[in-house]
Length: 124
Length: 124
Image (cartoon, rainbow over all chains, first blue to last red; front, side, top):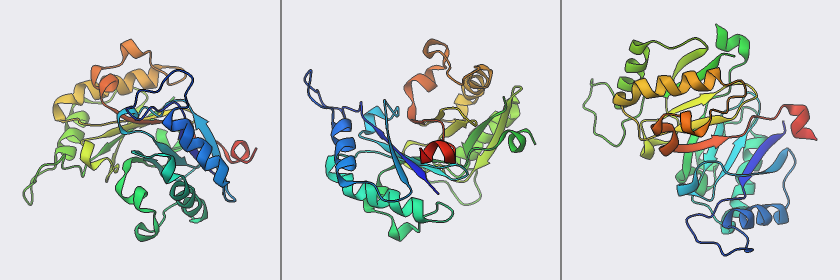
């Protein structure tokens, strides 16, 4: 299954970013793109994940799976973010065993969301 | 459209909850159910939204829409949560104008997630 790794590129992570300088969020995004993403991972830049006071932040999601949001990240975490996204993509149900998650995913969860109900399920 | 309001019922919101006593999360859930949910809102209890240090928490989601997670809530916020969920359900695209969101939704966002890509979109 192809999963989506959303990376907030507008995040200032509480810093004052001078005009024309890249935001911490865009630096994290660039670092992820530089590393290259593994099969089944689609990296998508997004403007604001509304986790501004816990930034930088990323989110993992895919149809029919739990979604996860992680925060307090920086470009130094790019490799772990990519590894965690690869594990999420590779897990047949999207549930990565706790111990095999990168430490940043174990300790820096901002939220997880249940799979989104289809209209018919939600109407039941 | 029917949208889903997930309410974390296991949340202790940083409190020590004596054995047999209801958690703050379950009290929030009960308060929401007591108020009664408006048309188009499906309330679903969930065990842990992984926002434990920002609890209690709730999430709004629906197919094809942005999802939202809010935290630092208590049962006293039940009425505002229901009002906010109703506004989300009523907005044709799920985007509720900022000024018409309840204050708890403006100030206590934990995260928002873009609509989940379908497999075909994600593979592009």
